[in-house]
Image (cartoon, rainbow, N blue to C red; front, side, top):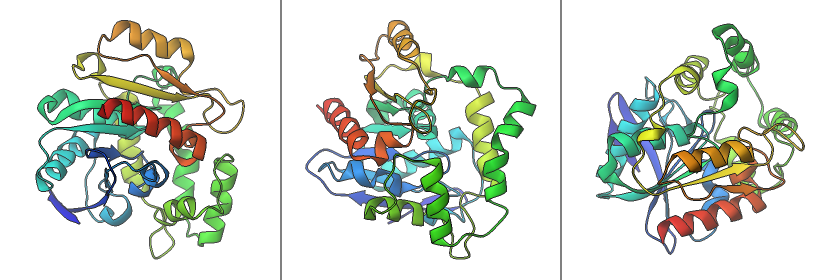
Length: 274
């Protein structure tokens, strides 16, 4: 379906399952197809393409706050008063903003390897940020065939199975018909800056919250986005946060894009729905 927002219409897909609806918000360089494997666990997921991504690629403008405002329009269009919200990576930061500013629309929150402050972000300067984003920007300055893009993703995300139909569908949705990657470099940079340098309101959360995090960041034995100790410190400080759930032997993307990661994430979603 298409949902009117400021500047255009968002594409929204509803995966029908056996549960109450969950609004599932994807990460910074992904799309609604990120949730394919989690949806396969008989969950009812409402999965929008955020502005600048997927079939919402022509909707201009960005920022975490604007994405959160868009999510309210999605809930309104589906006549959903309050739902459980899941956010993966950048989607977690959008979910936090949504839960703080529109608390009456969020009954519970599930953050998947995102949404809470990353220690690495606190150390970034603008120069370091620009250098870190250079490969993403370079990838958007060329065109890709689907096979070339799959090969690149297999290198970047070695734990995902690029022969699997659900994974292939997800990656195919990243490419525009002309072979350009979505989102654009400008959109990617604007959202990334907001995540890294923007204010975080996670301490203001007042809804029941679950946090799922990966053992690794990009491939086996890589340093995680969140350590076990960092996750425990969030739970100690934030009274609404349940005991964090570590998914062993998966990386950041693997939390939702591998069979093992999606199974744990779906189990935590079921707990939040309960």
